[in-house]
Image (cartoon, rainbow, N blue to C red; front, side, top):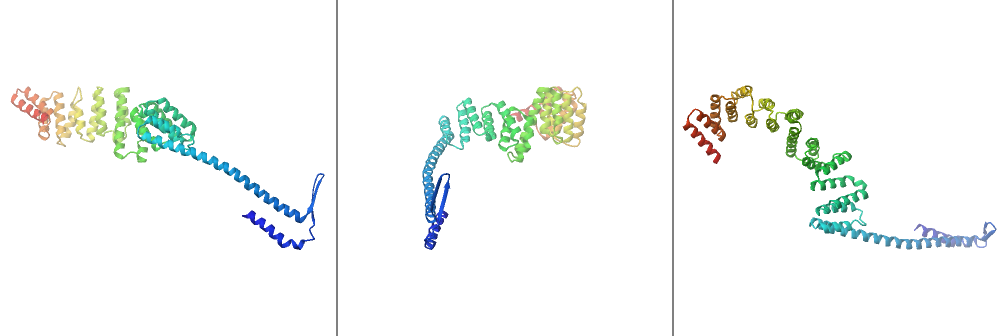
Length: 392
């Protein structure tokens, strides 16, 4: 538009001022080396305008020529993108339909001319694994990593998740640990870490990410507590296997103060100590736990102790029984008195226990005590009660 205005201005100026300068044309002289060009001002101005018009025409012509080339190139590129998109859509549909061979084929075709080929490679890896071809899976992931270096987190998570699904837990563990050191606590990575740590028994590592999982709303409070409980039980098992009772005590000492006497953790800890024949250690922890709370599970666990001297335990439970009239407490006292060889003290506690809460095992113990006294009628009566409870 500006160019056209310039041309029109020149022409208008020529029409307006041309007649006034008729006969006063002057001249223009160009000298270049041995060559000289001389012409009138009018001819020079007309030639300049014509030359400018010629340049505009050449510019227009070149624009048309190269514009056709550009449009042709754009058409071919658009066609490649459309084909890649069609292949990708077909591959994803086949993947959802679990037609893994066709999915892999279509997804690979869709990588050509596709700016989002990363997704094709990641899904092709899933399709290859579904067909049992782990080598192809790793090859596709490697291609994704090479062609999209900035997508290391996405590729790494996909690889670790596929390894986890395939049961390659140690490889998945190495993968998530490396990703965490590089990218920190990312939501998708945290979820995968949770699954991998459970599968590989990395209980301390799992405890370390529970707060992050909860803070990012990836688990609720109930699941967090369940995973925390599972983690400590796992640590108990590992310590018992690797270091015996001393290892178990070390783990108990590492527990948060509020959890040291939590029956849900103290009970399985004492059970493992008893299985390792660390009865004195278990007795000490049970006495401390029962001093905090009279728990039925801890009382039952105490009856499994094998001690040379039951007096400290019995004395502590008798003291509690004076304040708390609980059937579980009387049952525990009766069973422990029998272990200590004090049948006379055992029978009243067992009778109080079954009076409040009938229990088949307590009735059997009462029947055995009655047999020792040669009171067969009473013994048969106790056995009948026990049988009735067992068949109810």
